[in-house]
Length: 258
Ligand code: 13P
Image 1: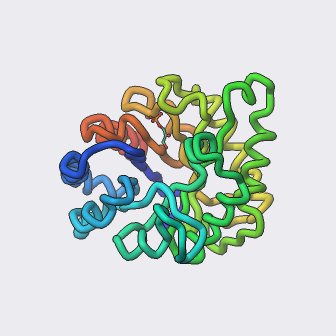
Image 2: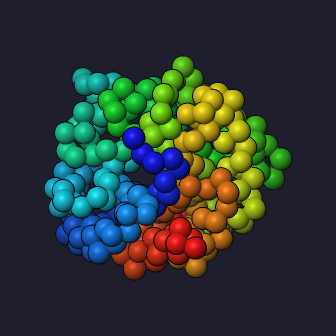
Image 3: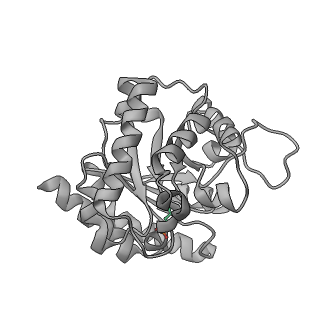
């Protein structure tokens, strides 16, 4: 079982990097393996690289995960990947409900929920992403949107241990824009999410890790990661270079060593 709310620094590579570049980046991240004495590090490469990257990191504590799965166990779903494929390729976690999947690929809470169920059933840890658009925030609807996404994406789900589920608050307006949420904005949303999780799942829910995602860089990481309800970061752009991703890990370590 994962130590309670152990900090997690995760890199979502999205649809980037050639195989050689991906291998080089993963290899360079091994330099930070010793940081896992204090926190968890996870890499989410494109699915076709999972087997190669997890073999490369076989003797490293760095976790590898997928960016998506299909809810069904197997079948005629051309182009999709299953939880079993991820697991048997060495993946241990999966990002689900990312805003790019919700908005570009029109994934609904219901569909995402089916994936979360499949992941938990397969013992693949889901990293469930939720977050509001700028219009929703400006209209004062942030908490209502988060609640709707939580209710819909976790409908009928049960968890026994906090380690079974990770959440990521990723305000859509902060993703890939360079416009990071202020630490106060992020903390406010995380506190709301934690309270909802407590109400819905009790102790196990309250102790689930909640990551912040959206333009996290080494120079803004400390402000975000010192917030009471923020348990780590889900990093996009800055995870594509070992110097910047490593820089965020170093910032996290500084906080933990204080
Ligand atoms: P950026 O860090 O590039 O804003 O992306 C965040 C994200 O979407 C991580 O899943």
